[in-house]
Structures are given as C-alpha cells and as structure tokens.
Image (cartoon, rainbow, N blue to C red):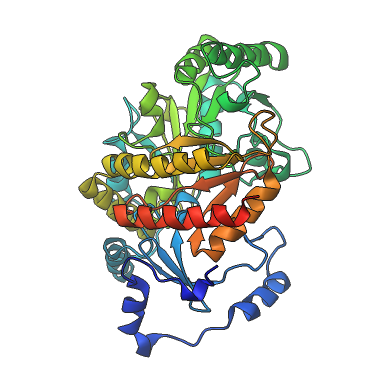
Amino acid sequence: MNDIQTIEPKVEDPIKDSASNNEGSMKPQSSGRESQSQQGDYLYPWVRPYYEDPLVMSSAEGVWVRDVDDNQFLDLFAGILTTSIGHCHPVVQEAVHEQMARLGHTSTLYITEGQIEAAKSLAQITPGELQTTCFTNSGTEAVESAIATARLYTGRHEIVALRLSYSGRSTLTSHMTAQRAWRLPFGGASGVVHARSPYPYRSPVGDGAECSDFFIDDLVEVIETTTGGQPAAFFAETIQGVAGYIVPPPDYFQRAAEVIRSYGGLFIIDEVQAGFGRTGKHWFGIEHWDVEPDIMVMAKGIANGFPVGATVTRPEIAEAWQGPSIATFGGNPIAMAAMRATQNVMNREDVPTRAHERGTQLRLGLDQLRDKYSWVGEVRGMGLMQGIELVTDRATKTPDGGRAEKLLEATKEEGLLVGRGGLFGHVIRVGPSLLITEDEIEEALKRFGAACERVDG
C-alpha cells in the first residue's frame, strides 16, 4: 500500500508550481504535529477536525490541497461544498484584491453598488418571483433571517422542520436541527416541530409508489397533532446534507408545498449545500421538482469560500420586515466582490451542465463500487452531490458507522478528501468543485476504489 508521500498524481501539480514562483514570500511554517498539539490549548473543543491524525492545511489550488508536511490531496469535499469553483480561483482573488484596495468595509448603514449588483445576480437565476435579498455571513444567519421573515409575514410562530435535518449552530437553528449530536443541550427555541425525513432508502413502506404518501401523511399528522394548526412555515433542505445526502421522492416537495400553503404557511427551501448548479442541469435543487419556494436560503458555494449567506424572497414577503435591523458584516464589499466574481465564473463555465456531466461520470464509478462491495447499501444524490451509505448487510440495512470511519481514514491514506454524515456517521459524502475535470474525477474514483479495498473484509 502506498504511503501518501509516494503517490504520483496523474494531473499537474498546480500548488507546487505556484509555490515555486513565490518562494521568496513564503514564511516558515510550523509542522503539523506542532499545530495539532496547540489545537486543544487555544480553540473550543467543538472545533473537532477529521481523522485520528488531523490534517493541517497549508495551500490549495483548484481541487488539490497540500498540508504543512507537504502531502498533497485531491479534494472531493470542497470545504463542505463551499469552494464551488475550486480553491484560490484567480478570478476571485483578483476581484477581492481590487476591492480591498478601493473599499474594504462599510456596514448596511450605507449603500454599496457591489451589494446591489450581487442581489441582482441572484434575482436573475432564482425561481419565479424571488428577487429581494437579505445578505448575512453564513447559512446559520440566513436560516435565522428566513424564519424571522416567515413569522413576521404570517404573524405566526410555529415552524415545521424535518427529522435528520441540519440548520446551523445558533440556539434557534440547532433546535431546528434534528440530530442529537448537533443540538445544543438546552431550550430556547420554542415552536419548532419535526416531521419524518423523506428518506426512501429507509422508508418503512419501501421506496415505491406508497413512499411519498407515507411521508406526506406524516407531515399532515405532525401539523394536526403537534402544532396549533397555524404554522408559519415548512422548512427543508432540498437534499439533506449532514443527514447523508437524502434525496426525497420525486413528488414530495410539490405535495409538501401544497400542504403547508393549505394551512396558511410559507414554503422555505434551504439550498445552502445544493444550490448554484451543484445538483446538475438547474441552478437550484428545488427546480428539479418544478416548485417555487416562498423563501430560499443559500450560503457556502455562493462566494467560493468567502462568508456570504443570503435569504431571498418575494418583495411582498420582504415588506413585512419593517423594523430596524443591521448586519455589520453582512453584504460587506469584500464578500460581495467575491460573490460577484464567483457568479461570473459559474455563468461562464455553465456549472449546472458541468455538474450534470461530471456527476454522471462520478455516479457511474460509485455505482460500480456498490456492485463490488456488499457493505455499500446505497449510492444516492444528484450531480456533484453524491452519498455512499454503508451498512453491515443489505438485508437489515443496519448502519455501519465503524466501517465509514475506517473508510474516511483510508481515503486520506490514498490522498483523497471526502466527508462523512448520516445519523450514525455511516454515510460518505462527496461534493467537489463544480469545475473538477474528467481526468480528476477518474483519478478520484481510482483513489476511492483503493480506499474501499483497504477496508473490505
């Protein structure tokens, strides 16, 4: 088995080439061991990195990253689906440098052209009449803004979310999250109830025609039995990310929108991970099901790693929020420059089409691995958002978090970075840059296959 230092990538090494041209400006770096030893001394314990021997990242370009010990890795997780057009994209770098030289910060107390142009760029690609945007710094804040907007517009309080969901780390969003490990152990977020996650692979009625009926019936029952019958909104991720890339039955969202609107509530969709072409063919995941949300939430890949969260809605819904508010860093000039540059590259490269093409290639390779290994229960996802659910055997579908942990370690040894999710940590998550090439997908599949061989048996 190859040690990581001996792996020879099939593609050029953009990181080393770039670094060699800037050796005079590089500062001496500490070793990985030194940084690991200081992690617990200066950071909260919830800052918990992957791997038994955590990586200390140093530099990156495109889909290739390097640690401080000069090991190179092919990145299939993109900072949790955030470096959407690749690490250190030159167009984004140039835009940020130029903006910093002109105007670095204002706040929402002043108008900037960059914020207006960024909002316009969203209005051009969001479904239907969604055109009014609130910029914040993260997905957590974008969700908070969406819930506040829905409550102000409807004059109601209760929110229906989904089990297995992940919505953020604030008090409200951690209680909208329906996984024990990610919830804060105290109250403070009243009015949130949870319906069953539309999880076809683990549906008690199977994944056939009755599957959608089962989950929609549960949604209605939750509203009827655990709310006052007047919910402000139904909130859901298009594809549940932390849950392990759960894709709902084809007609689920159309029917869920009909249900919540019949009760007078709003339909809110979270595109933090699934948005901006990642699911292939369309700009946003919800468009695959031909449903127009009342409010849409996005972040992560929107600005290729710069802190931008966005809540987008129709003008008449936004009008409900008339009281004073402020976002000191929300919509700041630097982040808006990064966002506009990212969107320009996405448009030029037609990332929805690219994600579909490369996602089809990726899925074919992962399906072949499923056919080879009995402990791969299901491969699922859309475009460049693919999950591999591991089980002890396919008959019982018992989650196998232990093997998933070993596989995560094995991919690292093969020079490949992937993510992990699922309620029991039993799902491997893949979500690379939307600009990943055919050759890079081929190389990634080779390395992932080698990692699977390591943990087989």
